[in-house]
Length: 167
Image (cartoon, rainbow, N blue to C red; front, side):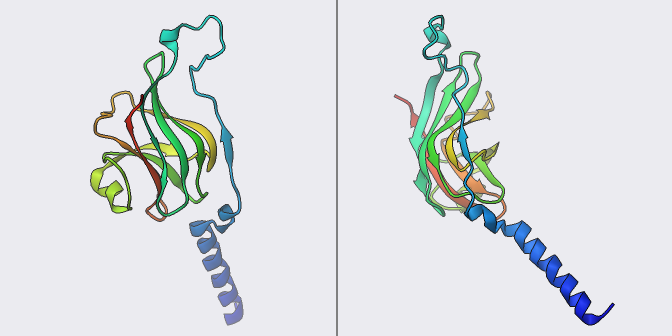
């Protein structure tokens, strides 16, 4: 094989690896999600008030590495499950973006997430819209008081919402 062919193959491999690492097309592609709150039977005539989702903690997102906005609320559902709901949510898209509950009052930098500790609630379903994430029922909500939109690929906090008792 000629030197030119080897250089061409190497360039293709490097470019493919860079594309996979950075996923530049996601800068231009938004993914919108429109989920309803589980157990929210507003409008159902037979629903008991005790079965309605109860907000426990809530907070508004602020931007860190990327413009992030919306509200994060943790609900206790009628069956006892906990759900984190993001409403009117919007942030940047990116590779390997996760939703973390962080053991801190707020997250204003990247170091707080690693230093304080976190629970991963899963991959971000979409960078725009209303969405739900299951929260472990045995989690200490007095300890985990912030939501971080975290890019694992680059260890960057896109934005965060400090949680306080819901009114």
